[in-house]
Amino acid sequence: MNWVQLSLLSAFFAGLVAVLGKLGMKGIDTTLATTARALVMLCTLTVVVFSTGKVDQIAKFSPQSWLYIFLAGLAGAASWLCYFQALKDGDATRVASIDKLSTVVTIALSLIFLGESLNWKVGTGALLIVAGGVLVAL
Image 1: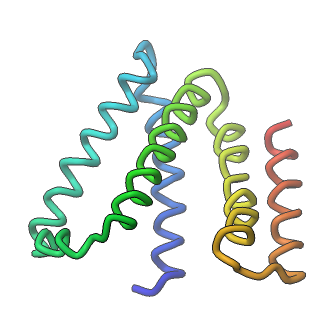
Image 2: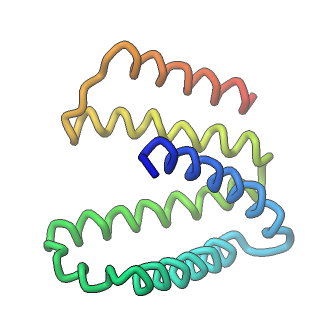
């Protein structure tokens, strides 16, 4: 599969997370629900890594790679803690639309830290994402 197909699958599964997470958190603490989700992910990903024979590649991680992956893990945990609490308190459609503003944050951070370029398509797309997020959230 190419990156576009994988991105579409990612969006589909992210949509499932919102709906299934909302259904599963009735009467449950959101931090505990997020932790349970993370444990399921850990088990699933561990099986995938071992079954594909990629576990030996961990030795190729540089200290810098470890640092950035660790920080990404912290950011992901913070994101999911906030996301599940928002899902518990708000409508899944509204929460997910605001969460997708992360695309705009990614664009801004990619410009600053990765040296990616901003052209009219990316800028217009970012503005439309913001407009769409606001419209759905209202």
